[in-house]
Image: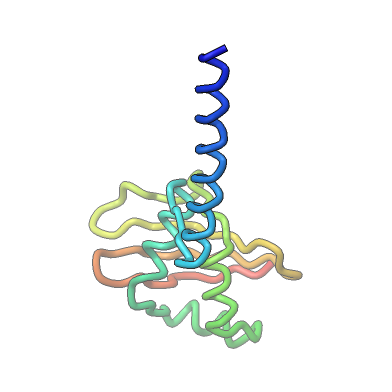
Length: 123
């Protein structure tokens, strides 16, 4: 009987602690970027973003602005099969859009200090 009481107290404390922790994390707007897709996109987003001439021309022709590109870099999916994450000196990633009417794909060259949008594909 003593063991059941201890387990009960532990579970009540665990529940209260979990609720309090969730409340504090929500107030501080905490993000956990543990998965490779989220880490890669965050790494690209925090760097100054440059656009190649080819990407700029494609964006102008298809009326794609930098806000759409920024949204792709937040909500997109990195296709690691098409990417070259071990390429030196700059890694190259293929990022596909999610939840857009038109499928847009980006080829991003991710260097140490900058991220360059090399190509934009519109399907």
